[in-house]
Amino acid sequence: MRNLTTSMTEGRPLPLMLRFAVPLLMGNLLQQMYNMIDAAIVGRILGTEALASVGASSSVQFLVLGFCMGACAGFGVPVAKYFGAGKLEHMKDYVFNGAVLTAVFAAVLTVFCAVLCPRILHILSVPENIYENAYRYLIVIFLGLPFTLLYNYLSSILRSIGDSRTPFFFLVISTVLNIFLDLFCIVILKWGCAGAAIATITAQAVSGILCLVFIIRKVKLLRLSRSHCRMQGMVTRELIVMGVPMGLQFSITAIGSMVMQSANNGLGSVYVSGFTAGMRIKQLTMCPFEAIGSAVSVFCSQNLGAGKAARIRKGIYEGLAIAVGYGLVAGTVLILFGKSLSMLFVGNSAVDVLDAAAKYLRCMGYFYWALGILNVCRMSTQGLGYAGRTVIAGVIEMFARCIVSLVFVGTFGYTAICFADQTAWVTACLYIAPMCFICVKGAERKSYDGRERAI
Image 1 (cartoon, rainbow, N blue to C red):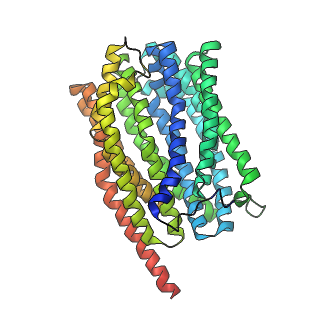
Image 2: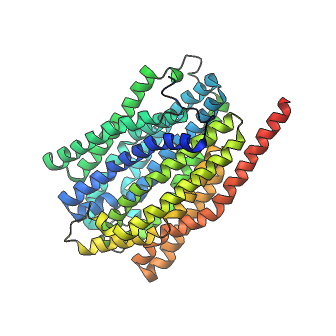
Image 3: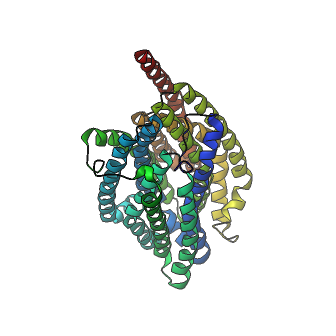
């Protein structure tokens, strides 16, 4: 078990976080490959209208899937805290209660989203010529939510105890499977956009089931006895207080993205296709931000539990340096090579679509450094247990995207869409960056008070 878990309470922060982040980064890249492979195969084989069908609901997918991922990540925060504190029996209570809450969320979200699927597409103003395929794709994604939650919860628990390698390994397997299933469902079975969704959900199911089998057979630290398998009010409340705000933070941010996408959908299928191709590349290049942010979050949680608040500030500074540096490099790549990257999804003949995608990526690239600050500060604040405050950052992002989409798209058209994300990032940074260090000071005071009481 010693080789599977990693304590971040001893040693230099940056090497610890990087060792944790690298498998997580690879896992994030592979997870994004699910959607990228769908988009590449759909766009190349079925055409740009089919690509628009897959991408027309990407914002609502982010809303729902973002809530799932955020909630599962939140459930892992107390696990990391008690693992860092060495209170392993108490940690197992959180593992079981989190699993029950995840199952409840899976049942409620699947039914709710499946029933409302047609209404959601109408709210997004999906054009009639792509509506049918968009529905087929989205309904399959919604019906597969239990598998999405299964993988995200189990991988969150494994990462909370310092094991970011195992979820990555299982994603490698499921990604290879997804490639073959995409080709089989779309090329051989002729299932169209629905086939792409079926391939994605099947691959996610495999990765979740593999995580479950691995934990049962190999991770003794997470084996539960009967005494752990009971719902406890205080444990459940703490999980909800951490998980729901983190899930809402993602979802609230996605509401702004839905408004932005609805405004963009009204501009026509050329801009929908261009926006979809640009979004796929954006999601891929965002993976390092997410990996760095998650590593800093786990680092903060474990050291908070261990009462080592002095290490927290150093870890955040080093995480910010890495994230901002990456943002500058990635932004330059998007500015210079956005059109070439878009050709992964769109053929050379679709000139208008390529120009739209390149413009979106170029405008975004100038502000990519801000996303590094936003992710690290937000995830650090969550890791310190202040999940509610990150919701405010999400609300700020939502309002910024809504204002740009509702006020400026009518005048500036697609150009306003190209600057909506950046406006949201910068305005949210103005709140979450100082708030993050206010929370660090709070953690330092608590640590100092604890030492005083111990003396």
